[in-house]
View: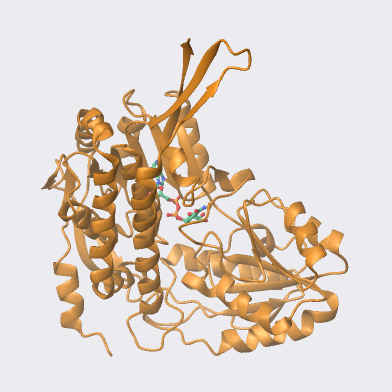
Length: 489
Ligand code: NAP
């Protein structure tokens, strides 16, 4: 069913636009506002409070003041708040999806999927909240007892990117709430609306005042500095680019903060000579085109066995050229706009560099004229080593295909990057599958599947793709300290 302008207005009007500090919705201290744009029209759709450094200090004060009370809150109740929030999100799935599409651009079906994915983190961590345990053992010399307990880290600062406006928030807020940590949440300036709607849901689900404080701001460094330099802060959890992650790690060094870093990727997608080509193409479409290619897990480069390369490239090009590009609210649209003009120019530059170096454009390769930041789904063949499109994170709907002769060459090409988030492997040979999975320098592998994200699995990277894991049994450990008690007996 077509989405009307009235429906869009209603959903935009329903979202709080203030900061949320110490359980109160309030305007920014300087009364400033931050404009939010629809990337499919390049027009402003609303504005939200633009926090200052003073607001950030107030948020830090609030998170610090309730830290002890919240840590003592019964785990079952912490879990039930998350469970209620999970249910409320799912009840409002359509409206939250529309909000997400309006501020970020992804097609409605993908926004609905993200809302469900986001909610699942709350359901998962609601269940984890009551499973926090410790250990008890006899010292090897028999003289004493060793006891370990796990306690909340303390106040956390959570920073998220624009590409998954809700799920990147729940992936941090869920385990922090479950573990008993208080927090300050700074969503990306381009997509504050999903984060504000989520905050209101948590408030309505019974989260006590001060546990979650939200600052939306046009100046992320100005609001982050007073928080990161405050000795009461104990942890930073960041999802975003490696470049900003490096800066934040430097800033975290002074306070020796616990850090979780979910950074950039450059995922290789390997198709071996024994692979099922049709399955590989199907996986490739998901790995490349999910979120318009604007995912840290997006397949960035396709390395295909020489003998399958023509067939794979042709079939992939056919699929991508059949995908409908347009405004995410329009029916049947599968590819929305990129987030802004800067991102579109970068994608365009990478394609031009590749063709200048000898790659050929099989399909696409152009900006779309008119309103919004659209770029056509693109397949590039015969991409030579050294082309920037193979080395840099594309963050757009462009699939460069290169070839390899043998397994060693494929693994070497896959690992020839500073990044190490995820790799995709297509093969029907079980021995090869294990060999290659073990040799890949990544935190995750999609084996004969083009998507790895799952709230009950540990998500994260190695090398310049980050530190730590989110989701799964590992996710809550990022928000817990282990205390050891040596007991004489
Ligand atoms: P970004 O530019 O690094 O921004 C991420 C967040 O950091 C935003 O909230 C941003 O605020 C904030 N920020 C920027 N500079 C800052 C500073 N000096 N101090 C404090 N905060 C600062 O990344 P992005 O463009 O939003 O997102 C795309 C990147 O995220 C890609 O590299 C992608 O791979 C990565 N990502 C990784 C994962 C993962 O799980 N590994 C998941 C999703 C995305 P503003 O919005 O105000 O700039």
